[in-house]
Amino acid sequence: MSFVREAVRKMEGYIPGEQPQEEGYIKLNTNENPYPPSPRVVERLIEFLSHSSLALYPQPLSDRVREKIEKVYGFPREWVIVGNGSDELLNLVFRIFAGKGDVVAYPFPTYTLYRTLALLQEAEPWEIPFPDDFSLPGEFVTAQANLKILCNPNSPTGTYVPLGEVESLLRRSSCPVLVDEAYVDFAPESALLLLSRFPNLLVARTLSKSFSLAGLRIGFLFAHPEVLQEILKAKDSYNVSTLSQVGAEMALEEIEYAMRNVEKIKNTRSWVTREMEEMGFYVYPSQANFVLVRRGGQDLRFLYEELKRRKILVRYFPEWPEYLRITIGADAQMEILLHNMREIIEGVA
Ligand SMILES: *Cc1c(COP(=O)(O)O)cnc(C)c1O
Image 1 (cartoon, rainbow, N blue to C red):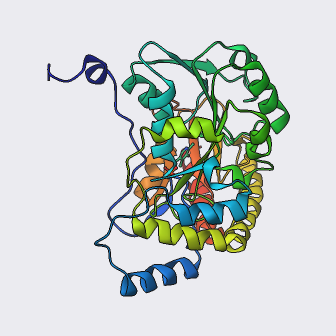
Image 2 (image 1 turned 60 degrees about the vertical axis):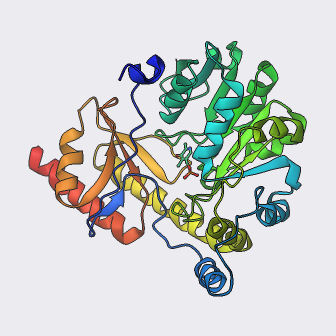
């Protein structure tokens, strides 16, 4: 494939979690919400399809979604770009801020898509290890880079950096700092509270996790209007489908519905954490809708594989074999998971 750019030939592609085609799995591997989205979102989509045409292009800037965003998050339309999932928005940020040879710094381990996006730009990923407690690495705060990314709460660890520390990161950084807040609705506070004071801050949010709409593909990127003006130059004109815009508008009216599900997931998270600790796992303190667990230094592939055989999918990262990342599902799903984990572990012992 000598006609493919060398940078692309030499890199690995991002590998998403498994999405099995077969039915019947308890799916705890890609942090989807176990609860369905608000029924009003579905009703609105059906109603739209029966009265409107898909022959026309969608609004290029998702204006009606942005009106709802202003009501919910308090930022006028010039402060936000709506994307086809927040992955699209991460992509745009890399294209705008990371050129060939530029340095993109982020604490590690984290969402491995950042590495892929950096390598595509021929930029250099600088992966700064988290300390054992997954607090913000001092080296990251002071790093000289062209772009810094903080996933907060972080995936796959679930750990959360308090806003005071995010603020000192912003003060100490002269480059743009992207805070990826895919899981922030499960955590105490959002970096949006800092946005008006820091022109180098960009905040990415998504409806995929807390709003149960991973299939709709909607993300938001918040930043100062002058920054977003530059980013818009690289955006596809019609990046968000008409149906996704219609669904997102309604989802943003159904905040209370989503937040009730968030509360349920947080309660399940506390209970599952205690149960797994009793089974001898170390469970990292999570502010997300998943937990990262380890059992001493044991390779947990056997547990992942045996659970999969029993039709329960959790996330095993070959890069980090001592850990499993487990999405918090509904109580009944987690009962089944815990029961099977106990059986498997007792069988091995
Ligand atoms: C799920 C996730 C995303 C992607 O969200 P989409 O809006 O579905 O594209 C981005 N960042 C992190 C850390 C995630 O876990």
